[in-house]
Length: 468
Image (cartoon, rainbow, N blue to C red; front, top):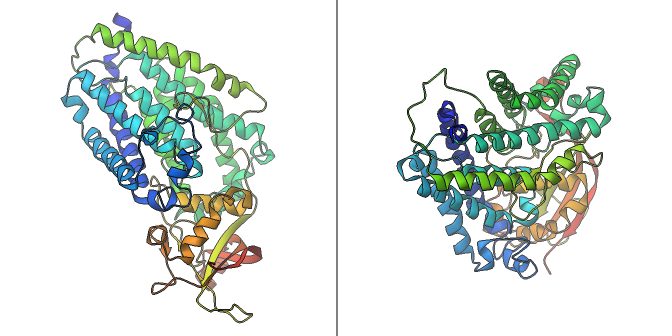
């Protein structure tokens, strides 16, 4: 079947696969370094407790067969090793079936982690990585030209990511329609980056230009992905530029980088490097790809209907394997930033003059003089959930109490998630949490105080608590 492959996309496939393997590497590394405190046997939301209630049919995972922290670590580090090998091009050095097996194992390992990750893995980029990683299984290697059907399915993913985000903005917060959302977003986003202060302080007309450009890129440009070249390549290039702008303005885990990888798969690089002569794909491979494409088409019904719905859901999976999902981001934008500040004391009986010392977080704002750091594409899961907790205590109901208990116990795995432990010699006797209003300082305040943030006490989030 001459239509089945397109050799002009051999370099697009190579770039996409290397980038995807790099994202997988970051995702598995994040899991390996953080799981013990979050979902380990002694974690805040232990996997063994979850597995007693979860059905293997609803949450397919290797860990239904066996769980221990040592086994989870082995899965995570094995994923790191395999992802690194694929990023280095190992899949192109083996037969086609072996390359497909490598990508399938990588996808199955990460699916196993996500499906037991509970609250800590409830982010849209987890499903995006799984959906994209599943399609990568069938993209082939240098033993065959890229299959056209898989290339189109990757564009369908990219379309839903961008168009879904654009629709949920227009349908959601009024500030997206009057182009004022970005007057607040750079300050109130979950985890600002080192340039976020400067983005926030741009003139307001530029914020309006930002918002308008966002609507163009997310509502109009995605349609052009399905047009002939070079228009599709130009559309993908605009998406890459927009995502790089987001990379500069904040920390959004690997969402932007994975979107860039998807966009690059739609770019025709044949003018840059002439495609080599690639062999005809085997018949079994053609049959498998056609069957997968048919399955994706059937599973696309609910996500497509979701795009057209007035009650559009954001970042939702419709099947336990996360094969075809709904995406979206920032359907509403906060006007005010709240932060939960966690403090401890070693005094036996807190009183009005008690000295409380703050715990420092790696990514989320705490110290007002500390310029936000760049962590993305690495994902600081605790810091992100602290942002949600500040929005509403309901987001923290399942894990915040266990988090405080581990601070009182001086748990080493939990303390490794933090930037600063104010009690290095012995754990505190009491821990409390208070809610503050944070805002970026003005140019004048920054020059006068050296502080990037100004904060005002709002109320108690958790009254002083000790271990029984």
